[in-house]
Length: 164
Image 1 (cartoon, helix red, strand yellow):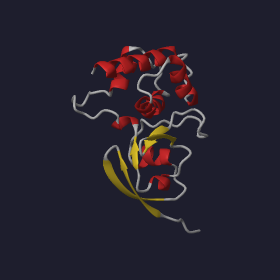
Image 2 (cartoon, one colour):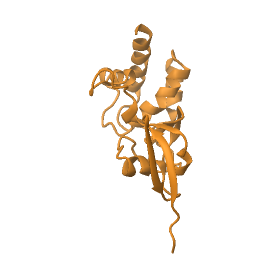
Image 3 (spheres, helix red, strand yellow):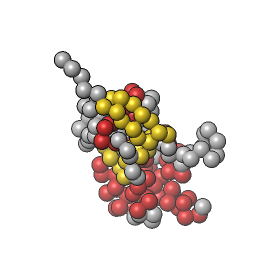
Image 4 (cartoon, one colour):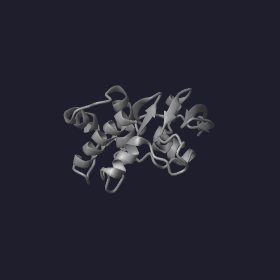
């Protein structure tokens, strides 16, 4: 039996990567196992929970539903790439800082996917109300927080962005 191999070239968190991969390799597995970016979590493997959400050319996608080769020629951003690093190695993206401040996470399993969902949402909706925030989060399952502190963190991030 012959294994088909193809070359994938994509940019992940600003770094160009070229790898030979099997066409059936999922983007989530490519990020986690080939690149070591384990912040992309795999929960349901059906695209339901949102834990595997990453950005593809700036838009939120479920990496467990995409083949890695579909990212060929595209820009992928993971939670590891959220901070621009300008504040040093421990710098946080404003949304991450708001989550820390408002206790928007507990176990943290869903947090990377929630953050990556919210980044393009807040880009397009810089001052959302609570209903809009909850609607944006409707594709991300969290079994710990009850979402109240997540919503509070988003509201805090919006206020912090407006003051900055």
